[in-house]
Length: 452
Image 1 (cartoon, rainbow, N blue to C red):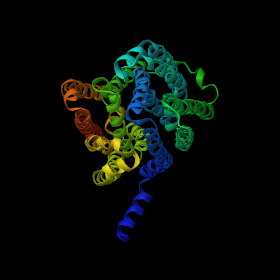
Image 2 (tube, one colour):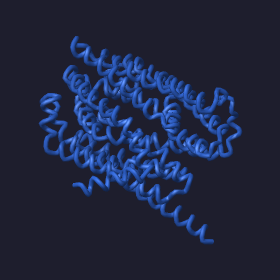
Image 3 (cartoon, rainbow, N blue to C red):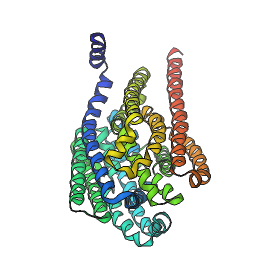
Image 4 (cartoon, rainbow, N blue to C red):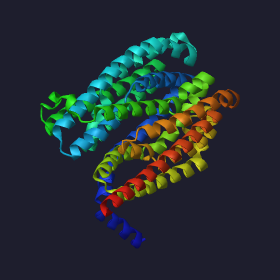
């Protein structure tokens, strides 16, 4: 035991990169852990207050609005980390300002467009997913969240590159407390689905506006108050940047259709009660992701810096160590759910949600793989290879969607869970393998260049 402790202490002292990642992750992890407790309790309160059918209704509404917003999103957070991070590493302040200006303009325009598009397609969501046109006004109300997140992705990318993880953690924590308080009051006073929807909407507005305000203040301090005057035309690789943004948008859209639209697919093939049960399983599985999700935000900038600086050994060491950390947590959580999951669901959510247990365990397989190799996509993005995730995700998505039309109507939510897990295993496995091969190839090329 003392030997293991000594190794950990030595690793902590010597590996400065891992220490910085863990420290930044620690800020987000502390916030995420507390938020996880709030989310877990509030999901129980909502489930007990509304029941499976009404829970399925608001789940479809929130997922529909979120997906419309993300459909037109160019994932500007990834764009900012890739190019703003590169400019800051090279201490090129004019280029850094130009990147943020371009990112904010693109994201702001697409957000306004998405808001208008939502009002056009919301009747389809009410008719074919909820299967009740009277629910249309719920889609329209929750659509306000799109405007509240006008340039939030750009803002969060700025805060990550500039190591403002404490601030991000604080915003997330306050938002969790705010939403939890409103949902608890709704539970006490026996509110309805509309009350719960408003609680989630107010939380979304807070989480969207705050990072924008903080990012503006931070940019003024780091780049000077005139940063926004930088001309976009000074950027040397606008074509490359456009290709990166479009590729990340398309790959993100494919991911959206496959994994982030699950409640909508279940609603389309089945009914709102099935959506409620599936949502319950997803809520528990998402607890698996909570401690690891901060790693994605904190490792992406470090991976990008290592790639730009061509520090291949440092990069491989970072990937190896964060993978081990995520694997330990994932295996522990999966074992707990395997032995106690059914009992936990029955005790907390109620016996009516126990049928979600098989779905939970099926989802655990795919989400577990995705959790362990969480860096699979960001590693390739750090090399500027946004097209590879696009092709892999597209192929896996087409396969999943085709199979869903046959299996889900016949075998229900268990089939949908199996298809999603299979999609994760296939796509994550391929992307992780290609990413590691790219690292080895780049390292070998640099070695040959030095030798020559």
